[in-house]
Length: 116
Image 1 (spheres, rainbow, N blue to C red):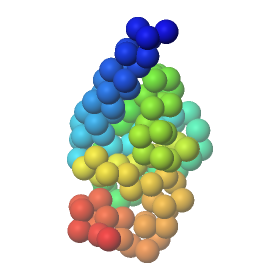
Image 2: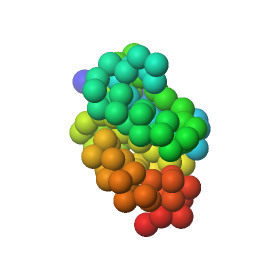
Image 3: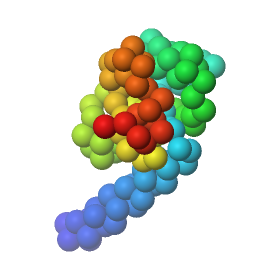
C-alpha cells in the first residue's frame, strides 16, 4: 500500500544514519559476533587478537545484538560477512584482509589513513 511505501525510504534513511553514527563512534570500529572478551565466532576472535597484537585501540559492536544493523551493514558496505573492520567510517575489510595487512606490516598504516 501507498502508506507503507512512503514509510520504507524513511526507515532506510534512519537506518543509514544509525549505521553512519555507529561507523564513526570510534576512529577504528569492529563489527563482530560477540565482544572482545567473549567472541561468538572464530573469525571475530582472530581479528580481535590481531588488533590487540598491534596495540590498536578500537570500539566494537555486537552484530548479534541487533538484526537490523547486522543486515543493514551488509548492504551498506556491500560486504556479506562478519567481522567487518572500519577506520574513520571506511571499510577496511574482514578477517582475510586484516590478516593480510598484518602479515605485510601495513595494518597500522592502513588504519591511520595513510595507506592505499
